[in-house]
Length: 261
Image 1 (cartoon, rainbow, N blue to C red):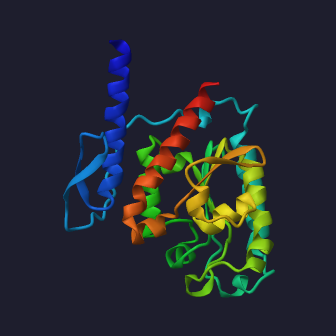
Image 2 (image 1 turned 45 degrees about the vertical axis):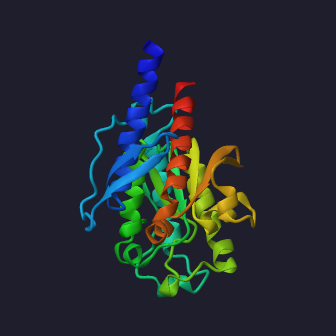
């Protein structure tokens, strides 16, 4: 009986998190059919401006760990120094056309780090990664796996916005990737999540399509790395959100396993 209660509690928790995730796309109610598949049963016609908050328990903060093992202040200082170095970078034309450098943001002690491809218009104006509609969705995804945005670190392959939000060029990636590599080396996350084709292919050094890469963990310098669809892609293709939910549950479960070791 205790095992059954534990299993049911886990199912209910997953359903609540999934519903919170679905609400981002206007779905208010989900149900389970005879085959145990999640089914949408009611939708709204308006998009909520304020992202709903989940009541799921938060993961244990890395700040509770002794500073002697992972000094937060030391990592923050190294990231700030790297940011200052990147501010004066003009190795490619993007340094001339940007409004602001979008270096990265989040917890230097993060166990989970998200990597996107490049800043968009909102990010360029504010100098922060993922602050537009895609950023709101990313926040919702993070909350759905029992974490807060302040628990993770978020960065992009490129630190400057490509004009017109065009795709990153090969030369731009080659010139900018050393900064991201240093960010990862400083933060040392337990798990990486590469969002979108360019982030996944760059980190994993492959030309395989994102649809093939997602759904399983890969290796980036010894760090388990999950490739998944970019939030901006989900806004255009909401039918793919279930796949991202499956990817995120795998990340959540792996983090719990690693934290318990």
